[in-house]
Amino acid sequence: MAKKLIQRYLPDPKSIKENRYLGFLGSTIDNPNLWHLNRRSAASAFFVGIFCAFIPIPFQMVVAACLAVIVRCNLPLSVALVWITNPVTMPAIFYFTYKVGCYILHVPVSETPLELTLHGVGVELGRVWKPLYLGSLVSGVIGGALCYFIIRLYWRWNIINHWRKRHQRRLS
Image 1 (cartoon, rainbow, N blue to C red):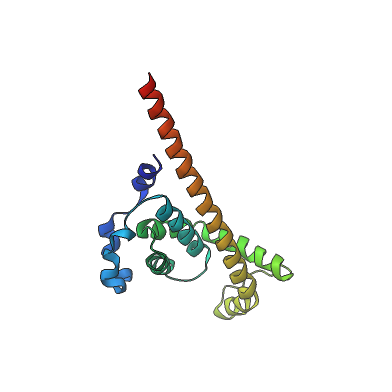
Image 2 (tube, rainbow, N blue to C red):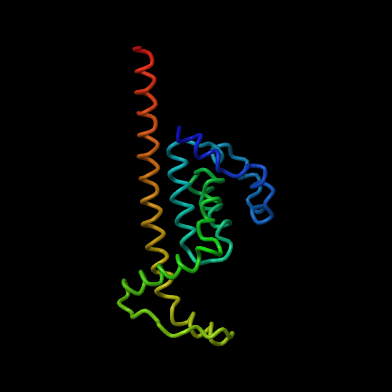
């Protein structure tokens, strides 16, 4: 079943409650609805997690946790999905979102090599921040919505398939 598959990869609730960055949520984190896993909470958690993963900000896990509390979706799943953008995948994902932003804004993609000095990085960030953030927001919303609908459909397909198998077992 889809629920068992997702629960296998979820972090332990104790580890999330003990996370030093999520301590400001206090007793809100004890809400049982944030830990319950059903079709709606899983799909919403995928939207929140994927959306936050595409936004180039520090402390993405904290933002995902706050949004999970607001939306009342599965907290561990939202926080875990943020790790799609890890140090290995981050450059490729953010370059893709930068190119999406350049396409939307009709701005040419910057081909100048990055100068690894504080001044060089500051100049380049001043040039690319608008397309990067616009592309990140658009990609995050589209990716999150796509995952939301895929999880909803997968979950429904899995339940219908389970019911059919159970019905066939009863007939034989």
